[in-house]
Length: 128
Image (cartoon, rainbow, N blue to C red; front, side):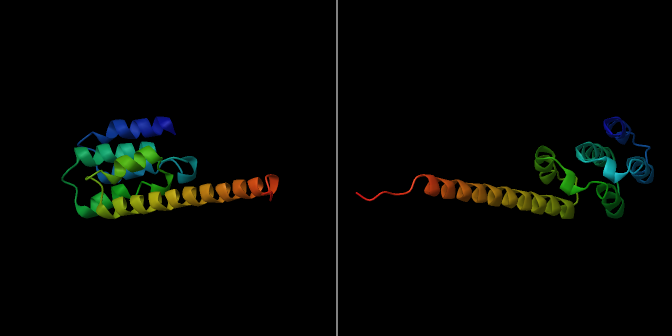
């Protein structure tokens, strides 16, 4: 997987590489075999940087290679600030990060309640 991601990043800078060929190369590995899409995001970022004349439709097809749910936190932060990505994709990234953060907060709050309940059981208040 890393080999293909590295290869995609390398060929993405080729100005003669069409978006169709780039897309076919990217999809040559099944999505299930890529638990993290950071390498794909990096390759897409390079491709968009090196091909600024793509049409909106072509940019959309290239951006659709990225599964925002499979981006690491660092890649999501970078992508959310990336002006080469489509606005719709940036919104999806921000939404997913908000959902992820909310889940972490809820899990932490649930864990704190369990600790408080344990404390109450173990350390009952005593009257004097």
